[in-house]
Length: 263
Image 1 (cartoon, rainbow, N blue to C red):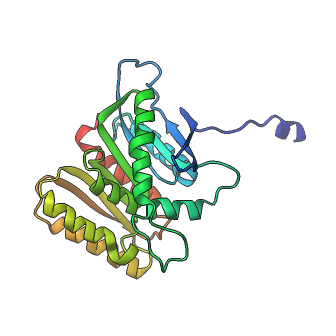
Image 2 (spheres, rainbow, N blue to C red; image 1 turned 120 degrees about the vertical axis):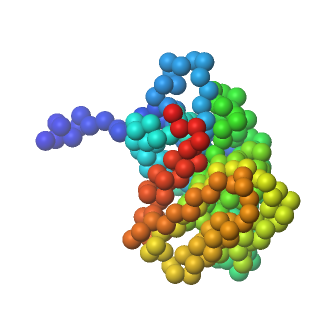
Image 3 (cartoon, rainbow, N blue to C red; image 1 turned 45 degrees about the vertical axis):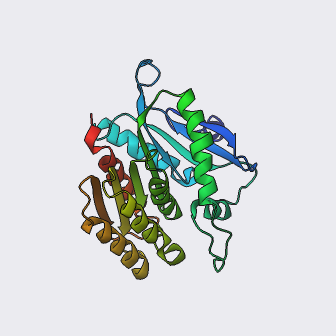
């Protein structure tokens, strides 16, 4: 038995590697980059891409979901780029709270309101690096996230519609700062009534009742808006709470946002 234990090897996600990168403010990040199985042997092919938050938790989950969906030909072959933090024992909770919230809430226990700077970092540093070094179809780009990450994904779509016309918002933190994102949604569609996008929004039925009510109200507001170009899927994950809803939601979300270009 001891000999067998000594011969163990590290398990690695297929076709996945990490790249170190720093923000202009000096924060150390890591990109978890997953390439499709055909990437190496298809030198002339360019691939759609998904950028997602919280790779420290969700890279294994999304990699597994994607592999299954690709096997079933339910999604096109994709490059996936997860964004997380590097360094010695990074404080993920504090760092993500600052990066993923679009406004500063002085009453919140953690520092917040770094969303604009984080989005600029993605736009001006991460995307140019990734899309110059990998074969990406720059017309087919999605943003995805969960909780604060879902809030940020919506914020990114509204703030940079030319960058992100596909969005997966899993249990997005709609209540943040007096439902700031709902106010931003109203302002955005006053100026962009014919905005064309594919949008997925979900929640878990066992999440806090006030949270479910907030997300559901936001879903219905978008559903009832008279926009012929916005393709929306509202989804509720039965019998799951905040974190447990992720697997089902990301599965449905990936299929939905790429439905128009399925293989």
